Image 1 (spheres, rainbow, N blue to C red):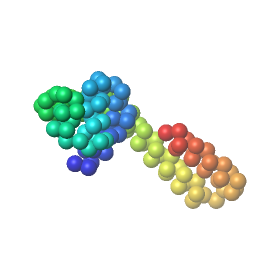
Image 2: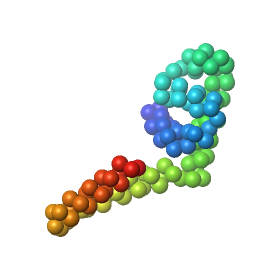
Image 3: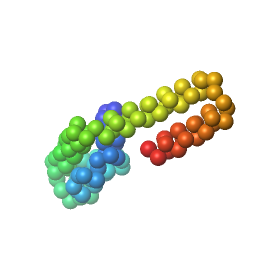
Image 4: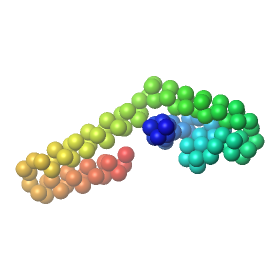
Amino acid sequence: MLEKMVEIGFLFDFYGKLLTDKQQETMTLYYYDDLSLGEIAERLAISRQGVYDHLQRGEELLRDYEKKLQLVKKYTNLKEGLEGFAEYIQGQEINPQIREELTKKLKGIKEAL
């Protein structure tokens, strides 16, 4: 269950704005605010089945967007590549000033992600 929550969290961060307002609200209440289907249904004045349908459709759309656009995959690969490059730099015998400058630039790139 935790893996699914992390997966949906990542997907929602990248593609959440592409969902309908109701889907966004439902997924936020469920995944981020940790409300039950019943609590969400009461808050949104819809049935528990309606909440479930919004969640299922939202998850399906998020996964479909990732399958087509692969932004999370690209982000993850880029982040891992930057971390590998940072480790490589630290292991090389280079001028300490150059190492420090490269490390600062990598840090800036990571923060921009």
